[in-house]
Amino acid sequence: YLAGGIVLTRNAIEQEDWSFINASLYAALVNYILKLTAIAFQQKVIGELMGSRSVRVRSLCNVNSLELRAIRKILEKKGLSFVKVMILVGGPDWPTSVLTGILRLSLVQMLIGSLPHIFLVLPMSLSGSLLIPQASGSSSETLRPLLLTLSFLVQLLAILIAFHYTVKYTVDHADELRSMEPDQDVELYDEEKKLYQQAKIEMTSWRRLPKRYRIGHIFAVILMIVSNLSFILLGDFCFEDFSVEDSIGEKLDGNVFNVIKRPLGIIMLSLFSAACTYVGLFGRFRKKKIRMYLQRSSFVGQIESRIFQNL
Image (tube, rainbow, N blue to C red):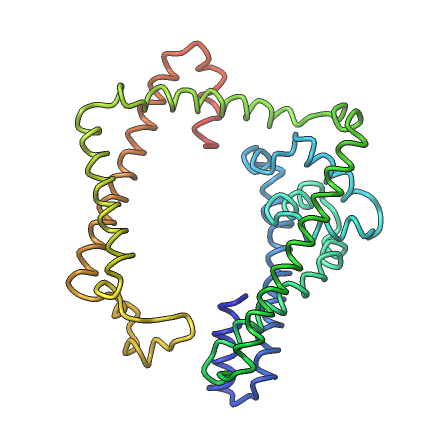
C-alpha cells in the first residue's frame, strides 16, 4: 500500500495532471480494490478450487487445529456479526481467506465483511502519497508518521480482537471442537511430513554429509557473510543512492540495473548468487538422499505415493 501510494499518486500528478488530493485518493482506491481482489482470489482460487483438491493447501491452513476449527465455526454462522468481521479483518490473510474458500462460504458476504480493511489501507496509502516530491513540506512530514502509526494501531487492534475471540471460542467450546471430524487426508499428510522431516534431519546432519558438501557449506556461508556485510557496510560503493520515491528515468537513466555500482556491486552480487546457487544444488542432493533413505525404510509404502508430490 505504501509503494502503491507513491507510484500511483506520482503518476497521476505527472501524467494526468491531477491535483495531489485527487491523485492520493485515486491511489488509495486502487490499493483498496487490490486488497479486495486478493481476498477474492485467495478464497475462490486457492481455497475453493485448489483447497478441495490439494491436501497441501489444507495442511498449510492447519485445518485440523482447534484454533482453525474455532474460526471455521465463527465464519459458518449466518450473518455478519462483529466477531465474524474482526476475524475477516484481523485474521491472517492466508488461512482466513483460504479457509472461507475451502468451506465454500459466500464470496459476497466475505467481501462485505472485509470492507473495514479501508481503515488499514487508507492511512498506509496516504503515507506513501506524502513521500513524493509534490507533497514535500512541514505538514507532510508531520502527517506521514501519524498515518503510519494509525495504520499500525488499526491492524494491531483488529489482530488482538480476532485473537481474543478465537481463543475465547476455543476455550468455551473445546469439547465440541475436539469432537469434530478431522480431515483424515490432512492427518495422514501431516504424519508423512513428520517422517519426512525426521529423514531430512537424519540424512543432512553434518556427520553424514560427504566432504565435498561440507566444504561447499563452509564456502557458501563465507560468501553469504562477505556479500551481506558488504551490502551493509559498503553499500555506498555497491549501489547508487536510490529510494522508493525516486524516478528510475531521472536517477538511473531509465535502466534499473544502473542502481548497481561497478565493480564492487557486481562482485558482491555475484558472490551472493554463487552461494544461492549452491544452496539450490544442495537441495536437489538432499531430496535425492532422503528419497533413498525412505525407500530403505519400512514406511515407504505409506509415503512414496504422496510426500514427494506434495512437499
